[in-house]
Length: 317
Image 1 (cartoon, rainbow, N blue to C red):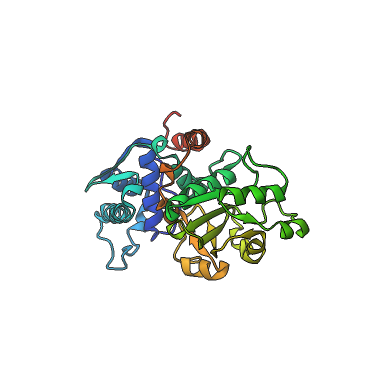
Image 2 (cartoon, rainbow, N blue to C red; image 1 turned 60 degrees about the vertical axis):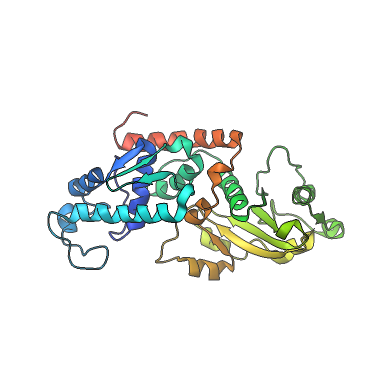
């Protein structure tokens, strides 16, 4: 198995992410192997002897000596079971009492890519150039599933079949969403930003009629993602297209938001936006909605970080 990533000793979610990543690489992981990993090397880089003195992750009594590794592994399995129950068919793993299995990362490239963007940071993985665009494409697929309606990636670099001048891109976006562009506003608007801070937009028209909900998303994959508050500007976009809909902002990130420093509520208040972190993006079934060409692109982009992980566990790539 790949070694557990360094984390706080109470980060059950991160340990569950680690088991998922290991399972996508190896197709199956046994609870015995996870417990053995804890016994041999401790957890999250903590020395085994020190771990014996740590409190239980559930806040109860001290872990019993000799049972602490198995107990921790069972707690991780409980998290995996909760995810299976919540995500249902969007979850690429089958979880039994002692085993978690998957079809492998090539069968679920979007799920694997999101996991690599998130947990891969803790292994120092090098990603192929263009991962920002690939994340936006996954958000496009996920938002299509979440809204059960059309979503379009507007971020830069633009897709090859899109026009280059920004006013023409806004007009093309209007065409794809079956909207009207405000030509007077476009004529006098100084469109200087590459994408006017809009990466993905989804439009839900209720019962196919005029009026609905438009979700305008800014995607962030860098460490400075918390500095993107206020984007995209709903006032600016409201004047460029005739939406005839309620406009909502969203912030999309490829990681699971921790409950400590940046919980969902704080992010929502900071950005005044809907929060789409990795678990919520998965709910949109992005792997079902990828084009064949982009699915192949994602697999190719995952090859290098997967090979780096395999070298960590001593398995030839």
